[in-house]
Image 1 (cartoon, rainbow, N blue to C red):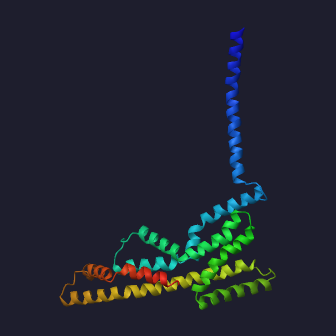
Image 2 (tube, helix red, strand yellow):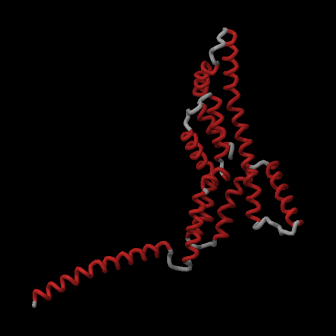
Image 3 (cartoon, rainbow, N blue to C red):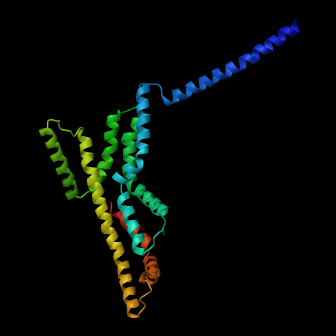
Length: 262
């Protein structure tokens, strides 16, 4: 009887072990979900909306980086530099993009810090609402863009937006602009982008000009020597690279690009 009772107890313990393991796993999952939805005033639906918003922002982050930061001007200038040197794949696209990104982070670091300190961090701490966070996060970027945008470009999109709003009002569709903050960004962002493209091409022209002079000199010399079949770029390429290295071109170019934002 004792052996039978002992065997029965062992069997019951073995049967209870999976149930206890499943119960522990369920408790662990519940604790993990509780970590995602912290206690306090924050509701589950509010936290889900915040997580959905963060995922959405991360998915469009590359586009936002190009639209509202200094990336456009920097990458355009560096791309024109490579074309002016006559190099098709050196430096590689990865190097140019990486350099442009780090220069963008350097230029935009005060703006990023302000947006994090005043908007994103209070939102994650449930101190402000999503609407307030949008305003506080977008304001630093809007201020940066307004300091760089040309008045002519800003006026262009402002007039277009005003005409569009007036046409909608006359058609009985209401104002159609929504929140004033969104309307401001709707005007500022495209104006800022075309302003950055213009400045990038202006800087690129100044970069390419000395290389063009070298190409003209080499082409004149080869033509005068009767070397019709020899492409002038084959001879001018090492001279352009040597010229760029001797004047410490990377230092001058990156320094000028960064200073152009301040």
